[in-house]
Amino acid sequence: MTHDAGAVQTEQERRYEEQQAQLEQRVAEMKHQVLVLSGKGGVGKSTCAANIAYGLSSRGLQVGLLDADLHGPTIPLMTGAEGMRALGGAEGLVPVPVHPNLLVMSMGFLLEDAASPVIWRGPIRANVLRQFVGEVEWGPLDCLVVDLPPGTGDEPLTIAQAFPGADGAVIVTTPQEASLAACRKAINFVRAVELPVLGVIENMSGFACPHCGQVTDVFTRGGGETMATKMGVPFLGRVPLSPEVVQLSDQGRPVLGADRAAAAAAPFAVIVDELAARLGLS
Image (cartoon, rainbow, N blue to C red; front, side):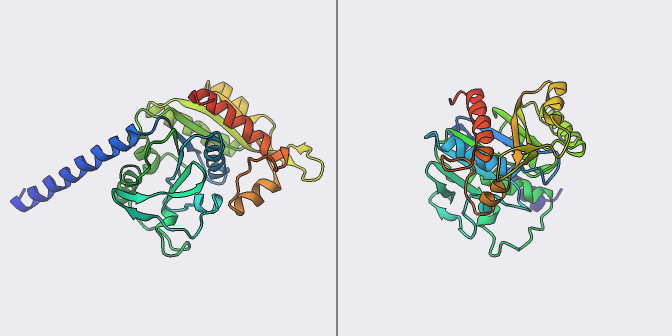
């Protein structure tokens, strides 16, 4: 190794150590961390993450929501913050306040155009995610909710390593077998990185009629709960496929709320209550 190469490596190591120290300092200010993931895409993971974060913040808790999906960030849309920008502060980027007590950070706040693709290899993605934790001015939080991209690749592993003391993971699935199979892999991933599984959410659990509220099974009924029982993990609840959930998410509005239809709001309320109890925040 040449002298110059050794100097570059030393500088990289120094920067990594500084970043790690800053990351650990930020994490120390977060009382709880919850990772939301799924084995495959399209199961409503971001919808669940956004409403969990909103539900906890509506209790008067200070909550952060980190959108760790660098390639397909949808949290800005779902929180009504699309088009907003994350600005620089004295100690890093300032997260975007989207509701009282709820701060959000997303790659979507850094792109010039929401349609611009992010074309990065794994090491760059991992570094950016570490920056989203250590170089964002989160401040003291009662809970950080992390919306992870689907699968068990670089991003989930990076976040799991950034939060070795996290409270655990919430895993989202739909009742169909293709999703359940991927969910089992996600559960085993969480176990492999030595984090607890806080529970499984079965999303799109039947179709809720917007007129009468009756729920009609579209997939196999109870698939998510049965799978959770067989895997030995808690089941947090099921959320029906509701037109109101889709409309509210596209409008950047939370599903929870006193003026929301019970078919949409009630299942999320049950899930947030159960999760808050598991975190000791009830």
